Amino acid sequence: MSEKISVNIAECRVAEGNSILESIGVGSCVVVCLYDAEKKIGGLAHILLPGRKSSHEKNPLRFAHSALDALIGQMRSLGCRRIVAKIFGGASMFPTVQSSIGDDNVKSARKKLHAENIQIRAEDVGGSQGRSIWFEISTGRVVVGKVYGETKEY
Image 1 (cartoon, one colour):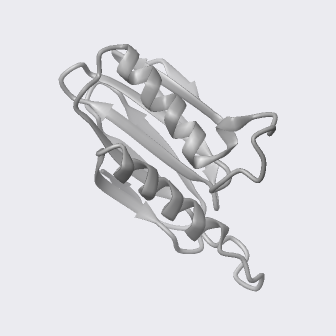
Image 2: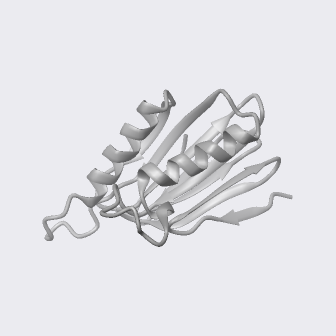
């Protein structure tokens, strides 16, 4: 039996074994799943915003750079060295509002992963639909369900 671990906005978690990391109702946020297939260890960050306005923010896990720093650090402390990524979300939830927060979140996550030499193996980003993400740690498989659409595996 798999243990489901919820990862909410501005949180990150690392798991192994038969765990499933899940983020439900992802809109303009970006979810980054990191995985080391050799160690069978995975991590998930649920990122709210692309960057900080000040270094005195109460929760640095809200932001792409600092959330990914924390997640990568946790995984490396467990011996993960061959980390790959999959990214999801970044939707434009309110098309009538001129906001690029979803796009900016995706760009910021990509930039940080590139700086860390972490290859992005799959992504499902943009569009106008929310998503829910389930990350199976034992296999590295990610299942993404869209609010008004299909469910896909990555």
